[in-house]
Length: 457
Image (cartoon, rainbow, N blue to C red; front, side, top):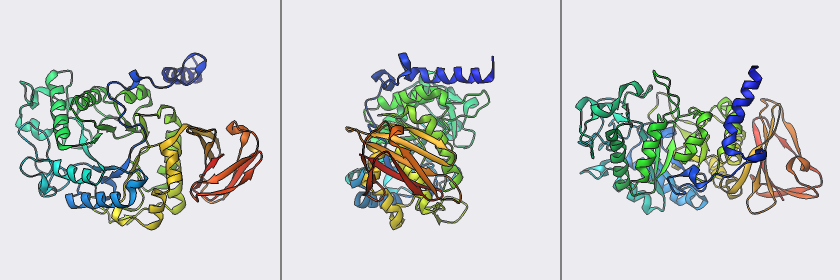
């Protein structure tokens, strides 16, 4: 069999679960998203501490970012405050023993989160975030702490200990903090049940589970389906509604159906920083994953590396994003028209006026939150166009991108390409103003590495 034929058959097999007779897209059924309820009807929007503080954020910095979000961003739909990794190590690095309870469940390091004293955990900080009208989230790692295995601590809810459930062949390949768990054993699932109930008691609304959706280990597992299912089941049975986000990427496209059933968002690429080439690479990833986006299941193009970054927790010095204004607008335009989750990586109190203006543009944000049928329309060399439907109307959203490194491009899209006829009014969503009436087509002058976002009435 020719390689091209094999590729077509493999691609068709991947697409068939989402298509019926005549290869028409079908909607996700309730069975596809069982067992959880609709936890994320639109792409989650929030802030994550990693890009500015690595693993070393402290309680006052989290509160400062929550204060800023409540005052300046919440009215536009931003709601999640997420503490990223290593909050259980005093230094924010894998050094010494992490803070744990007697059942091997990780607890906030008291030197960084003093309100966690006396067994309160993240409950006081979650209460503070909730008092601002926001949601609280934490980062966790797949598996069980290696320190718990070394001490062979008991598993809450099971007649077993850490060494009875650990899977040493499936440990994290890039962090020494955790070992894998054998969830084929009831005691292994009991450990996940125990941490989910702890997070529910703290008031956690969002869990970013790392070392989950992209895998490297000796026996070739590329995606940790058993532990993803165990964690999601534990969260569902915890008594609290919690969104599940999976990292890192790339999540294998072959596991798209499985991941939509268990997670509300999942990474489609590796870590992305303020690097133009990494932004440009996301166009291909977004094109492949667009089919799987919808209520309660959102492919995640990664955090927004804009604003002030790498303040602490990294070897280099703090900096403002290396992305130009045009590149920042391109990044956000792609994220919006793809309907990616939106997690700001910058320190919010340090936001510059330009970046803040991008994050508080209600007309542009509406594309991410309320459009449908999002897809790439064409790719003509360095000229790329995406289109989406405006929910509840016959209007269209159109995004135009110029990936050329030096030349401005006049990019044209015809009404016939959009399935439209007649005279149409075009509105520039970034500028929030109408730009004219057009009979058969619309074109815009787009700068190098730039983008435009429009509504066609």
